[in-house]
Length: 512
Picture 1 (cartoon, rainbow, N blue to C red):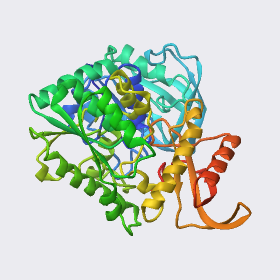
Picture 2: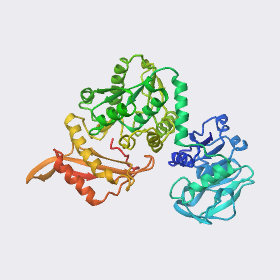
Picture 3: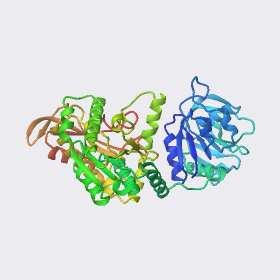
Picture 4: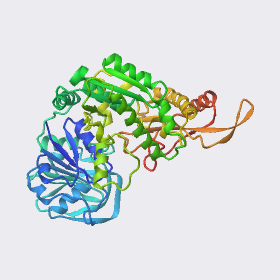
């Protein structure tokens, strides 16, 4: 299988590069600049991502100079291009005028990187530094009004660089540029697809588990359901599952998930209603991180207790970890994240005394790829297209203490939001939409000719490609009006509905 390694220098678009490469039919993996040279030398093609640093800054991430002497086809993007030129003997300098946003790239001579690209093409820029002198043997093939070295390359060494970001949709012909690099310059063949991934994953699972037994931790989300389905295809009846209902799922969700797993996969599923226990442990807890920790630990406590009841005893635990979780966890361990935004519940967290070995068949996939795997495995749309949902569930959408009454209010409001926005999900490309509840806030209202002093519901709807960034969705006013009317009429204790107009950044998709 093709081995495309993407060296991540901290750009917000790094994951997007991997997604684009896979969409084109090639295997892609993100690695750190600190990865040993021996690992980089295994690549059939290397892509150096953008990043926020300056190549001259103290502590700026870089790769060994020797990597450019290995004969590996390479493509540098933005910071990656600057670092490449800098380490190969060129010069990079701070620009007087920072170039950010759309620009027009003009090709000035033919190159294998720009085959099939119009002479004038829209590109997306985001940089304050720029190459001002090329290394020996490197030539310019494309320019923009402020960048004489927008496309550069050493054709003999198969080392190329672009100052813009071909991975974003704002660069009109970016996907073609990436394809030209991978196919024409690197000479790779397309061998990545979801069917091929499933086949390889099944073989790996069978090799890992052998004749042993495994147990899956179902949470009600897409990831755990698809991971369970994939492992079931590999080992069949030797897989069992525990579905811990912490009482913080969306309305009717526990029934949908249990039904899908039992009727479609025919797995041995044990559904545990532990909602009373979870609510008891969350009593008087307000701080979001504390909520997450309590829910995570309680989930493990319940899961561990129930897992001991299975015969024969499972030796493997199936978990729906995804690639973004793995990447962020690795960055956090290496100290490359400036701050922790919120705790990940998918990576780690298992007590050593459980003595279970992790099986994470989706750890190299992004969310949209997971959905495709689910479809190919025969899971219903109601499961495959379920919105991303936090492990702590509705607890992090109730701002304040979590109680049974407050959960009931939020479930009812959230069901209305989903019912009204479901028909718009595809046309408006909605990534996520839900209701959040502010029970500690009260405002005056008039309902049924009577004065009320009740609470607000927040409606949140965003568009996104990968949840790394997101924009608030432009929902039609009449739809929002209907949602507001229904919630204030049908949900007791609510007299005001607000719509969240915050993008990510500066906000996050979830409220806590």
